[in-house]
Amino acid sequence: MKKFAIIYDKIFLKHNPGSFHPEAPQRVQAILERLQKEDIKPYVEFFLPDTAIKEEILWNHSEYLYNLISQTKGKPYTQLDPDTVTNEYSFEAAVKAVGAQKTALKLLLEKDYNGAFALVRPPGHHAERDRAMGFCLFNNIAIAAYYAKNYYGLKRILIVDWDLHHGNGTQKSFYSDSEVLYFSTHQYPYYPGTGHYSEIGKDEGIGFTLNIPLPAYCGDEEYIYVFKHFLESIALQYKPQIIMVSAGFDFCEGDPLGSMEVTPQFGIPVLTKILKNIAEKTCNGKILFTLEGGYNLTNLQESVANLIFTFLGIKEIPEKIEFSEKTKKIETKILKPLKELLRYKTKWQI
Ligand SMILES: [Zn+2]
Image (cartoon, rainbow, N blue to C red; front, side, top):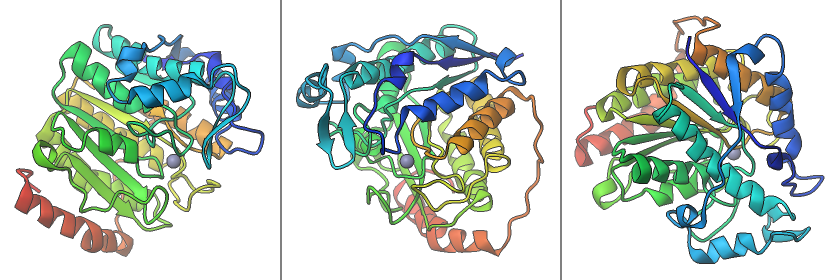
């Protein structure tokens, strides 16, 4: 039986950007309640996160940003950008959210855990070197990649960002870096505005940033098509030593911030299974999932549960899916020009 770890601390419930803010403590609370249910409880083990030290956060962020966030400590309200707000506990939550990545990697790379889910807030993928934005303070998954590089010497890290939004912060961190392959699917055009398919990295990093900007109202079929017919092929060539997932669930149907239609019942398990297959062929099945967005509580609960069930092989899902005309548009309008660009500029066989 595979072992699955959840990294969680109750400080994640104390960071609160305000009672009308969608990035609310109830998000993590809802997932926790689901994980306590009989059908899943025996399969997950909880761990407390490490606290990230300043030096580790400075791998990805400027001293200016670190000081800006640390100075919010103890203050009930600081507004960092139009939608990014802190309270007295936010700094502590943010350093634990980063530290949770370190804990997860220890379990995956030093112990025999196959999967780990960092059940953290605040989220991270929009946070840039010296800018907190889009509900994010420090970039949790970017620092996870630095942990893997700096503490474990990994040279091929695959980050899959399926959050509804483009992870501008993560992309920027590794834009010239071939040791981290950043792949993102996202609603486009939409916040934060980046993530056109022509953004493929620069210098050493050309071909190691891959963006699939999708129009609104894409669902299971389009996402599965992109994962099967694009990501899988490149990932198997790249042969990652670990897979990290910016696991936002705002791309699910009925999310108040998004217009995508992925279902927690089918789309999430199939996408998880595709990643699991890649991981089993390349990196002993090791995957670190980190919570990003997702603002519909039922979707969060069912998505995380189905992700874990699929990862552990507890629930079987249909192997085959028929692709309709809808996916042809994605192929001709987005994948085809991107593949042409990659054939011309990179070594990917695609
Ligand atoms: Zn998002």
